[in-house]
Image (cartoon, rainbow, N blue to C red; front, top):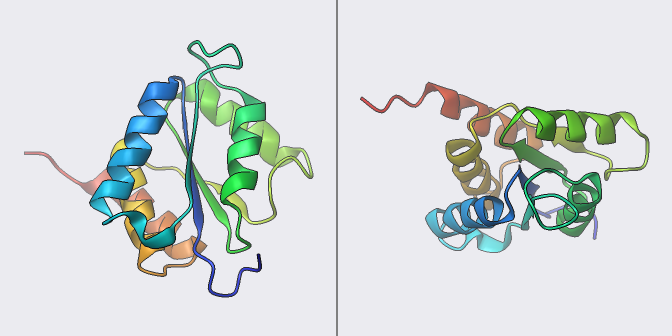
Length: 137
C-alpha cells in the first residue's frame, strides 16, 4: 500500500501485553473505531511475560505500515531503548517510523484520533506529544 491517502499507523509498546492491548482498544474506541487507522499492540516479552520484544515491535510496525508513517508510543524506559535500537538498525522498522515522546494512554488516544482525522505523521506526533500538557485538576 502506498502512503497516498493511507492513514498513519500507530504501534503501542508496553511491558505488558494486556496493557498494550487495552490501550489500543481504548484509543480505537475513543476515536470512534479509529476510522481505518491501523493500530497494533506490541506488549510483553517474547515468552509472553513482562518485558519488551524487538521482534514484536518490528512485527507490529510492519503490520500497521501503509506508507504514511508509523508512530510508536512506549510506556517505560527499556521499551524506549528497544525502539531506539530498532530505529538505529536499518531495515528493522518501516521507513517513516518514528518514536513519539508522549504519555502512553493520553498520547495513544491523541495519536489515533489525529490519524483517524487524516493527520500526517507530524500532526500525529504533535497531538500525542501535546498530551503531556493535559492537566487533571
